[in-house]
Image 1 (cartoon, rainbow over the protein chains, first blue to last red):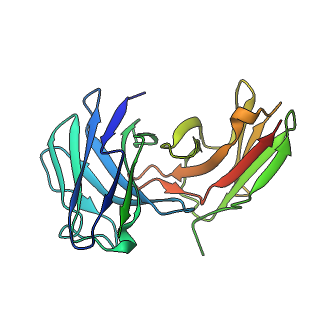
Image 2 (tube, rainbow over the protein chains, first blue to last red):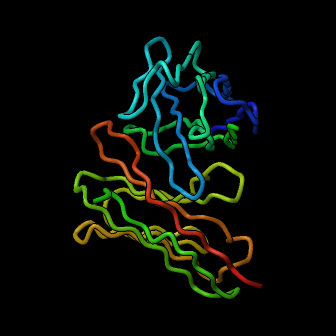
Length: 115
Length: 111
């Protein structure tokens, strides 16, 4: 399994500002994923990030709000832009293995509170 | 209707009990079935995964998949207080579709 780290582990931000979350993996991976987990709820996929191409966003998530970078095979960033209290959540990155990306390993998450 | 249904609990059991956690799903294209454990303030940790129907055992944990009923289960034998966590089922097809999660069941094992 991969070892995944995220920075920051938590943050408190003001409305209207932006926060960039970093995700580092200890091995090279093709696909990285960004999820949001709102309090008491399950995980919702925001986007899939492949190295060397634009991220693919799920319905309800747009690049202007959640720009993603994937500069190499071990690193990705997610920016939460122009934040509002509704963006308060846990943001998780993950990597996958298997022919169909069926096994995913998650980072520890970034807990974001927007005031 | 959600693609994956999971009773959120909470579920509280005494130490040593057998725990049964379940999910139902509607998408017959799902082929891989996973169980994740998530401790408070941590990311989800992959516990077990099963391909298609059948049983898989790993220590005190047994995963069962019944594709005919679109029903999956996770059994925990001799439950321990350290098993207290939220358990999420997840599943995916073979067409490169995204991993779909259940809501998670919050489990507390009381000493």
